[in-house]
Amino acid sequence: MLASIPTPEPLAFDQSGAWFGSPSIVMSRLPGSPVWEPLDVAEWTKQLASTLGGVHQTEARRVPKSMTRPAIWDRWTPTVLPEAAAEGVRAALSRLSEMDWESGLCHGDFHPGNVLFGSSTVTGVVDWVSARWGPVLSDLGRCRCALAIWPGDDAPERLLDHYAATTMRSTDGLAYWDVLSGAISVEHGGDWLAMYRDLDVAVDADVIRHRSNAFLREALGRARLV
Image (cartoon, rainbow, N blue to C red):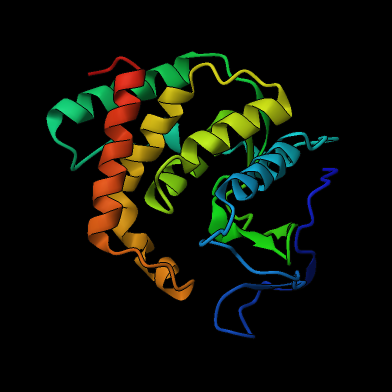
């Protein structure tokens, strides 16, 4: 892979688990820190969008087998959603599997908590454990859902506008990816509270649940699945 985005470099491996009791890897440290309270939302979302576009433009000389493993949309199904919403989500999952999507390097968990900023610009992207070669719109839907939770308002639309303008890619069918991300957030968003607390983001379970549900309903409407 030839990525233009600063990423941590692997420095040492411990496959035996001798260091910490389980297999471990030591990564280089990148400068900067996540930004969740931007002073200029337009500039912040613009930099997030251009960074995501840079990830997706990464050239691949060879795609490792580990990065073509089954994707979450091929193996996940809603379990706690009301049946009316679950039916729409299952329909969206079917469309995700059927349609021909533009593929590229995907981070797999692209959101502001995994993007580092210096004084004014992005200094790197971390947490690549979910990286894979797949539909690039999956990353965009994931980040839009994260921005719907925090800071909310029009941040998801700003991200979309900047991404489309920066990459010139078609975003047709994005609603289906938004449905997937919204549904996962509704069902599992409570598991992310520790991350928000570690980053001093004023989000609680009620905010996650309310905003995730709102994002999912809106996406189902755009996909005409309700």
